[in-house]
Length: 103
Image (tube, rainbow, N blue to C red; front, side, top):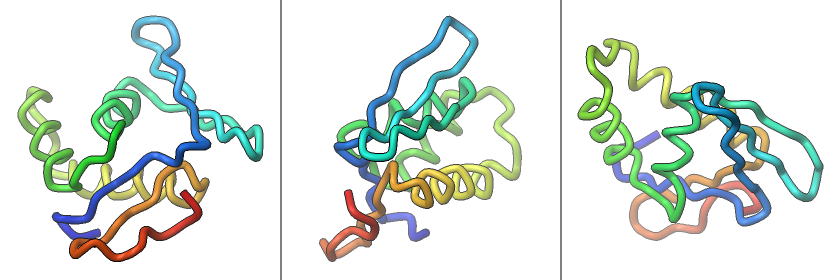
């Protein structure tokens, strides 16, 4: 994933926050499959709403997370990849090319 790639939630994915400290769930309306997310995942999803550049998500997490791990970039990449595999987000490459996936 490139720093300028834009991550866009699939309009057919609906997020719901669970009880405080419990994260949330993303439901794909076409498949009825749920994807549970922890508190960090829920925060990342909130940053993605409306679309966000990968570099901006990383910067915001580093700013807001005290003692962000050295593995933050890898962990965020893995999380976004898992969302992509479930068709919950699409990644639009820099330059305005068509997004991957069926968002």
